[in-house]
Length: 308
Image (tube, rainbow, N blue to C red; front, side):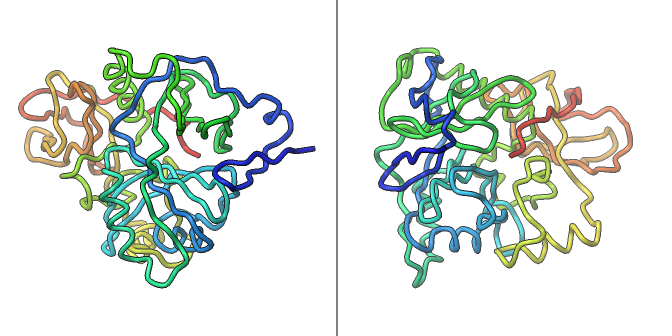
């Protein structure tokens, strides 16, 4: 048996054991102001997203979410985001680090005659907690009384991302900024590139190791940059990927990584304090000591479990 839960006039089918408890967890939630939401609403929402984005939106079941990316025609990543399929005609894009209004404006240029509205919902805000979600499990979303929750947990522990219309106890406390920075560092440790503006449209999905998140498809039909992505995959020409480093001095995105003789890579994401960073480097590099700005780098393994 299952129940239908209404969210913004759309039905989402939730298994009965999950629908029995539609109250959010009492976990300590905090604001993540570097995340925005873009809504795609209309009969052509799924078809439009499937044609524009790198992952297989058509195959995603309603009530689930996936990692996805939007690419330039040259196959460079504009943004990496969570795509939530509330229903076939309502999608929500959760964007870290990319201004939602700018993303929506760029995306509207490709709507043409499709039956679709693209907007930044004024009534939804993003908050997070370092605890498992009340209802969501892996890629299945949880429906709350005033919004949705996503399971953002991984090997490093449980996490909940919530899209809601109301504040929760604890939201807006003075330590929100520190918790948001901890959230970003967790993303980096698990290979989710948090791209500042200067690093957008610079890297292919393979160079950002987005296969670790299952954030793109090489089997679906055409989308911007698809030919380059598929050619790189099927010809085995991916030569660079992500590596994670702990810094001995603060790092910044865009800085060069050196092996002592030459620059071999670039920092693409750095934590707020600069102590942790993701870099794009050759996959077959020599095991030489690396540095950035004259300071040594300590490579640490990427953690698993964030793929959906």
